[in-house]
Length: 216
Image (cartoon, rainbow, N blue to C red; front, side, top):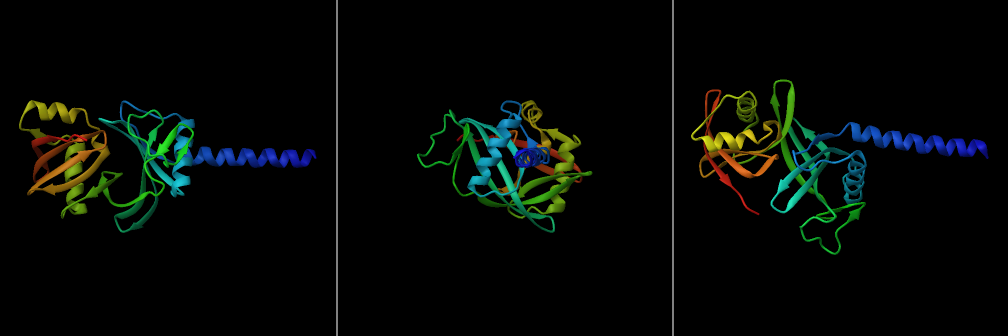
């Protein structure tokens, strides 16, 4: 009997250790407002697993007009610098967003859908660091490398002071999308998701020429 109890205790301990290691291996990107404790991270990962993400690799928070949003990404498949991954949006119970009656829930969180979305990202390189960024409308990986490198290393000029102040609120290593809109290249950041920065690239220097506020 004692042997069985000891074996059970060891199995529980190993499961707990595995869960802890899973959390430690996660990439996390939390904006300055909302953040998650270790227990909350565990609940979010469990909910993502229930919805179909078997191996979570990143958890990030974003702040929208509708409150805090948590995005879990995982089940990555690589082909060169392209990454196919699953993403799931999760909200805390009590969020001002309307929760569907059939929304999957676990602990203090609920998921937007029972099925994650499948998305494509590109591994963009800045020195020895890598960022997964969505590239749209003809932006290539090499071009994205130059663009993000300029933002990260501060080779940026501005058309006015408000653009400089807006970019100062951004974690540039949280670039989310780089694309072209109406003939103008732009970039968005997870840490300021309601803002689009339009820019020009001259050799290795960026000039921010306009910014657009988006409303949900």
